[in-house]
Image 1: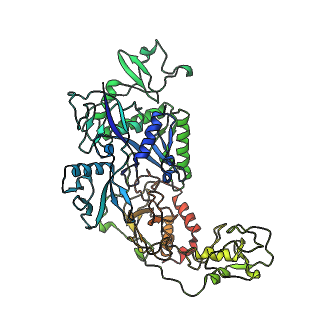
Image 2: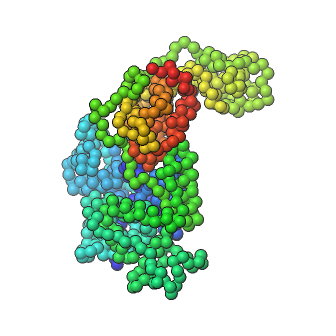
Amino acid sequence: MLVASAVVVWEWLNEHGRWRPYSPAVSHQIEAAIRSGDIRGGSVVLGQVESRLSPYIIDLQSMHQFRQDTGTIRPVRRSFYDPASAPGQGWQWEWENDAGSWTPYDIEVAIAIDNAYSRQQPCLDLTTLGFCYLIDFQNMTQVNRQSQRCRRIQRRVDTPYPLVSGPLPLPKGGSGGVGGGLTGALSVYPNGAIMTTGLGQPCSCQQCMLVFSVKTNTGGAGRSLTIQRPKASALTASKPLNPPKSATLGRGQHLKSNGNTYQTLPHGLAISKNTRSSLAGLSRPALQRIAMAQSRALIASGVPTVPVKNLNGSSPVHPALAGITGILMSAAALPVCLTRPPKLVLHPPPVSKSDIKPVPGFGHCCRKTTKKQARKGKTPEDVVKKYLQKVKSPPDEDCTICMEPLGGPSGYKGPGVGPVSRAESVGRLAQCGHLYHFQCLVAMYNNGNKDGSLQCPTCKTIYGVKTGNQPAGKMEYHIIPHSLPGHPDCKSIRIIYNIPPGIQGPEHPNPGKPFTARGFPRHCYLPDSDKGRKVLRLLLVAWDRRLIFSVGTSSTTGESDTVIWNEVHHKTEFGSNLTGHGFPDPGHLDNVLDELRAQGITEDDGLTEK
């Protein structure tokens, strides 16, 4: 056995199937939690290091990131790199986004860029890594080969990622050093990644097994891995396979059987040292088959499971319950088997133009929106008065906008609101009956979209026709000859949204400032059923009213001044439901109808849509 070192980078899987790195500070925090003791029930609250990550928790037992406010669950992984590589030396490579801030490259890309930079290459083509970009080191720019768009890049110093050491078995075929001074206990690949079999003592659950295949494809599919339980005959001198509670073996304890040493795993399985040393030679498909086989074995043996793939949906409640259940079970030292579809299927099979058909009952297949035109005519006071009834004797209650008594003056002292007579100081909204200071309602209207509509801040009842601040763009929709999971009897409606970046208007958070539009065109899917077509018809109304998207801060990336979804959920996964944005989801269409109703769009509006 040799002692070797490697740099650890923790990463999470985003909705595009790319592994994105946590910052060095977060990786240090997670490693500190691992070193603090038994991690079987461990979880890490990421907001303790970075405030913008306050909703996120990492469950170390199941190797998943859990978002507390939405219930979103994403896989995480622990990757190992050469200490001499960019993450080990604290070099961060970043590109400048449209907002003028800096976004880090994926770790593999950053290592490739840093290696080329260290070799004093004039440029680097990222095509081999799956990106259509050319890195120009002389000008420190990134050039898109298709659009020729040029962005600045930078190399800066940050805290190095954490360094870990552990006993590692010698690789087969000798003990010569590899990877720039590392001992032969590590296999270092051209991108700087390390496949190791012994940094710590990982368990053999599905997630930990998959960690062994990170960033590698060694072509060892022909090798075999046997995970077995120690034979009962070898244990008669100590305890049977199911010992009483007081004699239960913990993580890391060892059993001996016929001269072989087995390490007990959290799920009651055992793995020999010889077997563990062969894990690094397995390809990803082989490891996935082993992991799925073990998962089925765990279910058969009565290990509690959390079937996340059956709980995903547009509502955050079900995946949130699954995540919380997994964390609580881990905290109680119970093994958790999170069963998820093994493959992310974002798009349907290729479709030829001749197979694309218009949606029956719709006389068009494309809808555009333009920049919002300023409304002329009625003043804010006139708009508010249209929806109010006068109140001669206000009750002894507080205005829920300014929190001042209704019998007194409004607590709003800002600009844009003129004086009013005492008889008009308080009004009752005609439909819902809630009471407010007139000046408070005018101030609320001035701070909104100023589109002639008003929304009760208490019950959200909408007065007039509500519109949003969605930027100009295009919405296309058509039929494709493929069925969605859960809807085998019908074809699918594909919606394609396309919004370009631009300059914010007066209705946006920062007028005159550029906004970005990430991930466009965005493809979404509905079943081509009667209810699916009804939802499409109402989505067209929402598009015309500029309510599908908005400009704000992304809850996923934290980027400000960017195009974001506006509280109407869409399904962006075609053939799976790994991220919770796919099918099957029996309640999705009803949920979308409810969300559109909350935006003031009802089925009656769909009757007038042509």
